Structure formats: C-alpha cells, structure tokens
Image (cartoon, rainbow, N blue to C red; front, top):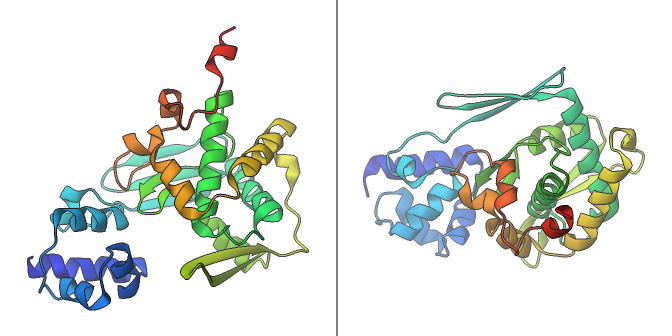
Amino acid sequence: MTTNLAKKIKQLREKSGFSQGYMADKLKMSRPTYMQIEKGGRELTISEAEKLASIFGMSLENFLAGKEPVKIDIIFEKGNKKKQTKKDDIRISVPQEYKEKFKTTFAYILKKVGGKPNVGMTVLYKLLYFIDFDYYEKFEEQLTGAVYIKNHYGPTPVMFAKIADEMKENNELEIVSTKFYQKDQKKYFINPKYSPDLSVLNAMEIKHIDDELERLSDLNATELSDLSREDVPWITAEDGNPLDYESVFYRTDKTSVRDYAEHNL
C-alpha cells in the first residue's frame, strides 16, 4: 500500500471522529493490525478496501485514488421548495416546513420508543428511513422531506445531526454515550418538559409513524441495517450519495409495504 493512501486513511478516520479501535472492529481485525495499515506496513485486501470506502461514504474508485469524500451541506431556508445542486459536493436547501416535520417526527419517535434499550443512533436512522420511504411508497407523497445518503451506517438522514445539535443547545434533548451488548451506542433522550408540536403532522402521518414503530422498533441495529440494505433505494444508490425516493416503486416483496393489487382495484 502506498504511503499516501495510508496517510489518507488516517486523515479520513480522524476527520470522521473514529477511533482506531472502532476501525479495527469494523474491519474485524485487531487494533495493532489496523495500526499497521495506517503506517503503510500492511497491504489492504479488496474486501478491506471496499469496507473502508463504505465507512467513509466513498466509492471504491475514489477511495483508492485518495479523493475527498463527497461533502453534503444542509441549509435550512424559508419557502416550500427543496433545491439540490451538485458539482463535486452536494448542497441541499431544506424548507422550514420540512425541518419542522423532521424535528417533530424525531421527537415523537423518542417520546414513544426512545427509552427502549435497542434504540440508539443507528436504530433511529433506520426508523426514520423506513417511516419516510414507506410513507412515500404507500401514499406517493413525502412525509418529512428528509434526504438520506448511502454510507457505512446504512441509509443516513443528513438533517439528523444538525437537528439533534440544535435541540441539544435548546435543552430539548440529551445525548448520552453508552453500551448495548458491549457495543458502543449513542442514546437520545427528550427533555420531559419539551413537547413536540404535533400540529405539523396530520392524522394519517401520525398513524403511519405509529404503525412503523409497532412493526420495527423492537428490532436491533443489525437487523434494521440488514433490512435497509436489502431495500432497492439503498441498492441502487452510489456510496456517499442520496437515495432516490422513486425507487421504492421497484421494491421486492421483502421490503414493500404497499398492496398494489388492492390499489389497482
């Protein structure tokens, strides 16, 4: 492995805030073995390179070429239209309406199931993903309007971190690092004094969220991640890029939630 690639791996790891132990665990190797990779003393296998590229949200080609990951900027704006422009990076303008619906849906999920021991960051990502994409498949409309990208976490809502940080600053949310079955887990707890504004969601949307939570909220992070990776929006997206809502209409029986026979009657 070239020295430049080894240095790039270290830079990407540090920029992402990952520890060497975390990387070693993801690559299923010891920490000393992983350290040899960052020092340029150990060659990568193809499967290891593919895994590293996925962790950093990159295509294998761009990873091996030492390119920077695609950067996604989220800007909250007033208005009712979401715009996306792309050159090397992706810039997404999110209407205030969608921001409020995402925040309310996130808070509602935490109120309902956030106390379950399995519900950490990764599970929340997947619950939000299936709530949004299942709603689109069933009703051909967006619920929160969130954009999800393909990375090593699985489908990841790009608004999540910014919304969570804002809520934490406003004392609406507490974020705690803990363990679940010896694995690192980030938990999110709503301030009991904070009540989400449910008026931004209609009755059909709330029922849909409740149905999805009943169906999925007892699954662990691995089970939900595996299910999302079998879904057509994930399969057809490129690493580090947004998932296409329209692709839900090509789902297989494994993940489809719409009764198309009934719909066509």
